[in-house]
Amino acid sequence: MVQVVLPALITDIRRIYDVYFSAFENDSMGRLMVKILFPMEIDDEFRKAHAAGTLAYWHTSPWQYTFKCVDTDTGDIIGMCLGDIYLQERTVEERMNHGVPWLTGAERERAEAILDPLWEVREKLFGGRPYIYCHVIGVDPQHQGRKAGALLVQWGIELGAKANLPVYFESSPSTVKLYKRMGFEQIEEKVVHKAAVLGTEADIEVPLMVKMPAGMGMSFAEWRRASLDKSN
Ligand SMILES: CC(C)(COP(=O)(O)OP(=O)(O)OC[C@H]1O[C@@H](n2cnc3c(N)ncnc32)[C@H](O)[C@@H]1OP(=O)(O)O)[C@@H](O)C(=O)NCCC(=O)NCCS
Image (cartoon, rainbow, N blue to C red; front, side):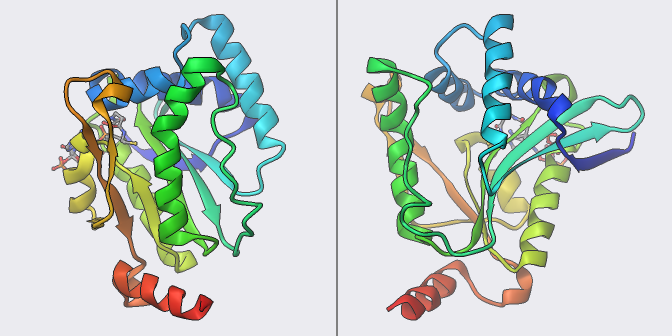
């Protein structure tokens, strides 16, 4: 089986998000996060509206990219990833937190109580500096364990190396090992989701992961210090 990573096309949006909505079924933290972000029933009508909303967003976003992992034997999309590639400095306005506008009331408050602290840490770590922020990697459960995830992660690492930028993302607690093995470091900063917000028995800590480009020859801590010195 040969797998390739390609940019997602407009005609892929439905399938890409079918992969996304199914990928987390077997991961307790991931399943919970999807449920908090999308508490509605994920039925055909929702998927159609969600695909239309995604396409509308693609018309506006200057830095968000979606990629697919395709099994070339069948042509099937078996994995996806989504990330913001910030090649240039961004202004305060450009990196404003828009919250979760597709929800209202208590559902929106709950989703924002989860996402806001993640945004605050990104703001603290990177501010307006260029970097690559991976929102999500998901592989269709029927195809998990066939190296599509590793291929997508490797693709992101190579992009970071070519662009000479750190690659950053918030991991599921269950997948930290996979990313560490691929060269990511878990940074000291932490985000802890409170049990009361999650509706779980215990708080859950989100591992924050970064991969520095090898060519830069700097650890993340050194890169942060250097960029802080530059901005002062
Ligand atoms: C995590 C995920 C992206 C990995 O993709 P995958 O295609 O199933 O994984 P791969 O086949 O590429 O596995 C690569 C290696 O990572 C290991 N691995 C895969 N999933 C793992 C997990 N959840 N925990 C620990 N190790 C894992 C594999 O055992 C494999 O190890 P090996 O090289 O020694 O054989 C995929 O399983 C998935 O979509 N999970 C649910 C969503 C999720 O957790 N996304 C990540 C957070 S955004």
